[in-house]
Length: 311
Image 1 (cartoon, rainbow, N blue to C red):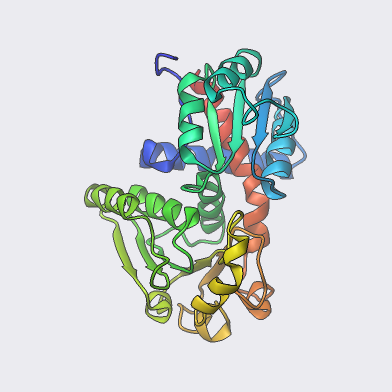
Image 2: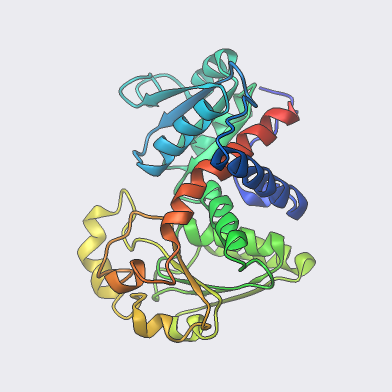
């Protein structure tokens, strides 16, 4: 196993407020350069291994494009391309890939698999999504909040499933010290141990975390309203039941009308119109979801450059 000198990006709870903001500011600076037509080779000749046990549009495109724009090269590795999960232990795959590549991004199911892989990796490992956390999405989300002027004492309302996105919002709020209100249907609350961790961190940061089951109460006066799909990948057999249980949790115009007048709407996508969000909200003037989606590219470039500098 490695000696623990490598910085990985598995969850936001491993990072300080200053480090999170530094990564996002670096991403914003690289974005400004990109928009000005300057693609600086911050990582010339570096290779990013991208392991996908869960498929994705935004994660694949943003990481592969990102490493290319930084002067490096991305390797797309699905279950069909490597032996991981087909007989070879995680620790063996980790040691082999990290001996050949400069950085690894993994999008998988069990967070424990990511932790095991990183413990045997010689190079930085990035969490592209697990069932427990989706931290790279939160970098993009907060970058979007900054760009739209919603990073000064924000009040964020999350409406929907207590899933990896909710857990990541908990960690971001607990680290940065803003107010987060979560409303989930009964039986679909956030993981108790993760909530407990966030509450402990909030004592130091001054964050306010409110968890309940009333979406209207959560959204009332909020400056940022966000949600996620009701049935994540791997939960397809629960979809019809979840649609019934989540009745009343759709972010529609009436729900957004309870938020602050200048509130913005975020969604990590893909969005299912008519379920967790209405067509009119997703395509409306308060929605910044496509700015948010693009910012996956720029926030992750900032993250990769930052991690590379730590080595």
